[in-house]
Structures are given as C-alpha cells and as structure tokens.
Image (cartoon, rainbow, N blue to C red; front, side, top):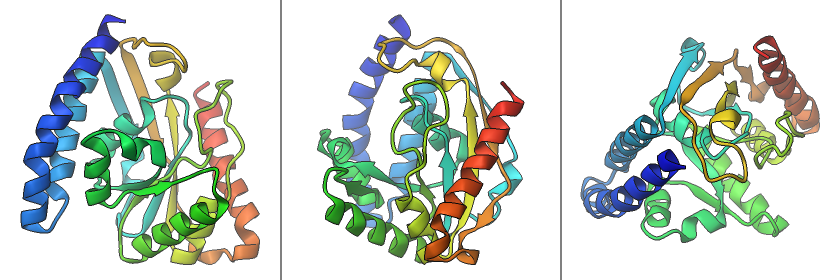
Length: 235
C-alpha cells in the first residue's frame, strides 16, 4: 500500500506540472512530442517508485512503427504505463471517455491524438474506430487492448472485433504482445503494488491488409492464438 500511495502522490503532483509545461510547448511547436517525453519521464519515475522492472523480448518485431497496432493482453492498470515506457514509441490509443474527464490528463491525451470512445454508444464507438483507422493511415502507431477491459479471472478473455476492423481498413501491421507478471504486481480491485519483474514479449506481426472485412473473425482468432501460446509458454 505504501508503494501505491507513493505513486499516486507523485503522479498527482507531476501530471499538473508537466501538463502546464508541456501543453504550451506542444502548441508552440505544433507537435505532441514534448508531451510524450514528459509522460515517459514521469512514468519511468512511477515505475521506480513501484519497484517494477520490465524485461522486453522481441523488440525487433516492431520494425517500422508507422501504421502499426500493438495488441497486448490486459490484466492490470499497470499494463499501459509499462508498455508506454518499455516500447519507447509515441503511440496513440482508443480509450474510454471517462479517462478524458481527468483534469490535465484528459487535455494532454486529446492534444496527443488519443481517441475517446463511449462503449455504451455503438454509433460513437464506430466513429471512434473510423478516426483510429484514419490516424493509422496517416502513419501513426496505436496501442489497443483487444479484450477491451482487464481480465477478471487472470485468463485471456474474448477479443472484441472493432480494433481488427480498423486495422484491416487501414492496412496496418498488428504486433501481438504477451504481458506477464502485471496482475501479480498490481491486482485488480486492490490498492496495492508489489515490487517485481514484468515480462513483455513482442510477437511476430501479422499484416491486417491481407485480411478482408469478412475475415475479421479469423484475424482476431489468429492474434489471440499467438498471444495465448506465448502466455502458455511462460506459465
């Protein structure tokens, strides 16, 4: 609990200050790059405070990061910070609208090109995926959790199809990723953080452009199978 409290206090102080510094610079330079640098620095400090060490395998599978979608399993609130720091890529994401209501952080995410989605509104969800596909076509990299939410059982959950439709429409490469150890370090539903090692394994990419809209179920199954196999290898 002490580690979790330290991280919350640090981020509660850091995010407003970094936002007040970074947002004007981002507007002045017409680029969100400074926001990513400040964000990566802050996340790095938070991970040190939490005692989290990250080991990355298969980094070569990222290749050219233009128009790619990184798709990891989702077990903990620790997932996104670990990926943001470990990948070193200025990725964007489709995130639930509630996150954009957080003071300072919400504004930073919008300026950085993140896309909000209302999961209860199918029309808005479709519009969000269309925006993601357009952003991918422009060469941006996205992080999307295909399960949509954190697993409740610790097992890999079913995959939602929307992200795969966006990747197919944009002709993106999908890089599956297997995250292990996050659930143990930051369990769902508990205000605690344990020190330890997280393993991130980036898997061989798939070319979503080689699939049609009718093949979206098969693409989702192919990605899920690769992640499931990687998780089973280290179980």
